[in-house]
Length: 98
Length: 98
Image (spheres, rainbow over the protein chains, first blue to last red):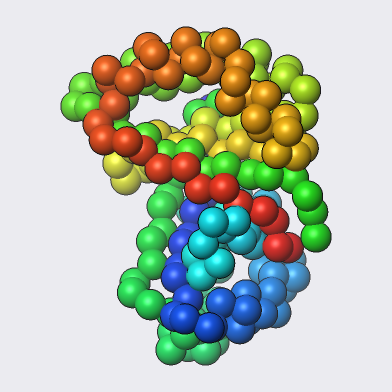
């Protein structure tokens, strides 16, 4: 067993805005990976739905995830992304079984 | 960019059967990781929904994923799991952007 916290974060870009959303996320990837406790931060592309944008994140523990969620660059990213997204998205908190 | 193929495979166990589904998957994890082209095969547990079972897989290319999908142990696994699952599940084919 493992105490890390993983998040599968999914968003749907509105028509024609997927590239812009991906660019916004890409602009914070390096900064996020440099945060204390960030073990993995992968931006993924749904091969069957270009507008479906997925991040897989892994954090050392809930505290480092909480610090990330409170970070200023994440808050700015959300503000810039919100008008480009359809619906609320989905965040699934998972841990590794094996 | 990267030519690997990743799959996020999600299933929902019927009430009371989540542990049994996880055990079945666990029984094929080592065999699957030993398959040619398997780069990652992670069994995950949804921290907010015990019956939501998630696998993240990464394969060298579509050919190695296809060979895995045609493998006898996967077919046996599906046959054993099917009566324990609710609905059809969801498989998302993704590639890494960054």
